[in-house]
Every structure is written in C-alpha cells, then in structure tokens.
Image 1 (cartoon, rainbow, N blue to C red):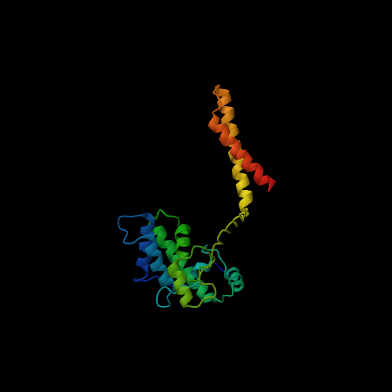
Image 2 (cartoon, helix red, strand yellow):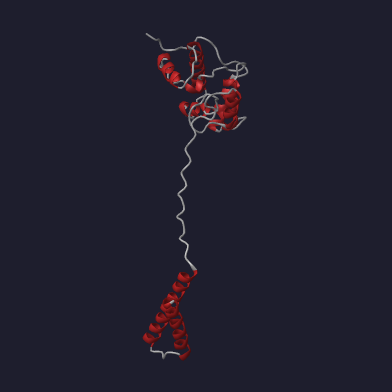
Length: 218
C-alpha cells in the first residue's frame, strides 16, 4: 500500500525560499511585496524547471493533495508520453508540502490551490491552456513534444455570403422600379394632403414610365 507522502527532504533553501515568499506576498498585495504575481510566477517557474534550482519538473503534472498516489500519476503521465520516475514525483510532492507550510505560516489570504494553479502555468511541462510565454520558450528549448500546452481553438470565421452579380440591364430595371414607386408614394402623399399634382412631376413620371416600358420591351 502506498503511504501518504511526507516531506523528508528539504527542497527549498536560502535562494529559492524567498521566491515562494515573494509570490505569496504578491498574491496578497502586501506592502512588503517586492514583485508582481506575474514576475514572481516567472521567477519561481524558472527555478522549478532548472536542474540547478528547485528542479521539480514534474510539479505542474502532479495532484498536489497530500493523499495523492504515484500509481495514479504514473498512469496519466504515460498516456501523455512522459516518464518521470517515482523519485522525481516524490521530490515534487515534497516541494508542494514545503510550499503549503510556508503558505500556512504566512497567513496568506490567497487560496493555496489558486497560487499553485497560476504557478503551474509558468512551468515548461504544463500541459493545459494559458501557458506562460516564458514556460513555452523553455519547453521549446528543451524540445518537448507539447511545448505550447493545450491551445484554445480559434472560433471559425463565418463565411461571407457571395453577392450575386446583377447585369446592367437588370440593375437599371430595378432603379426605374424604385423611381416609379417613389413617384406613386409622392402622389399619394399629395392627395392625402389635398395638394394639386404638379405638371412637372406628372411629366417626369411619364418619362420614367416610358423608359421603363422600353427596357422591358427590349
């Protein structure tokens, strides 16, 4: 039976511990914060990926709960084509344990899982969406199979309806039909208002009507 993992080795030190502190303070927006959340995530993510830093590359893939089991992690990582050892998984779990203790000791307001989730996106093995550009750059340099993580599908553009081409004769017929309609509308309005029809309007109407008849006859 797999035992619950306990921190038996110290991962964080005088160099990397302050990176965790800076991230927690940035999340809480404390006056003592020396960095932003984004900058702190980048710095800590880089240290996690570095063999000379925290060196916990499996971190973004693990279930951070204390009851997590290696067998579950191993089955999932193999489906993704990865092969982290149990030692590497244990190291990542110890890192999370130490991180959790620092979070608790600092009385941080930000939820622990929220802090971890934002940090994971800045690690080069993060397989999900919204992966940090810094992590993508390191992943590409390391020639990982999935350097950009899960990229959101771009919405498909709605194809524009093709406009039907209208020949010149048909277009002219349509224009003259509109003119006839306009003349009739004007005549109706004048009749309702009790105004006499103007000879010039009648002449114009006849000219347009005659032109329309000629086009249709042709």
